[in-house]
Image 1 (spheres, rainbow, N blue to C red):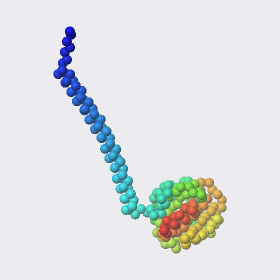
Image 2 (image 1 turned 180 degrees about the vertical axis):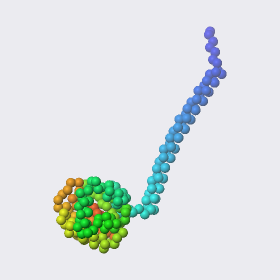
Image 3 (image 1 turned 30 degrees about the vertical axis):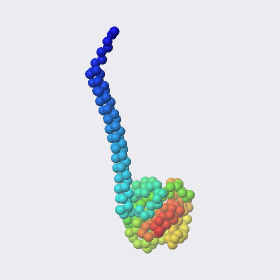
Image 4 (image 1 turned 120 degrees about the horizontal axis):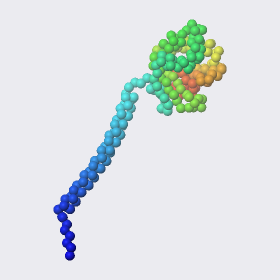
Length: 220
């Protein structure tokens, strides 16, 4: 009879060794899973904190024109008047030349009599497409000059504006709204301009519908 001898001590040691390795491997896996869990949770919490801080900052600070911005706006930006005219002039130079000419004919200056009548910072708001235009926008300026002074300047250039625009005025919620419809259509320029003075603001837009919405926001 053949006898088989089993070295128990070595087998026991091997078994213990293998078991120890398995336990460590399991522990490493658990630690990695735990680390990932806490890592992503920390990122999520950080994002929530940042968003909450931004909300608090916007709510607590006085941001110019914030009360004029509709909830469904596409873009809201604060722009510097001087920078706005300088940057857009290469694209709208013919229109700007025409505007300056309106003022020169009545011995006024667009820069001295209009730009200076408003604070340097203006609000630009782009809205979703509506029935009037696919690119409705408005510019909001805060007055430095009096309501009467600005109206006086606009009244003086009215005669010249009527040479190129169908000029009409109407009342909306006791606010005088001026509508300018170009007599000759021009590529890349709006088919309608509408403007109004509402409390401390002067609003100009390419959408009558949008102007009424902004008037409602200011008054209400």
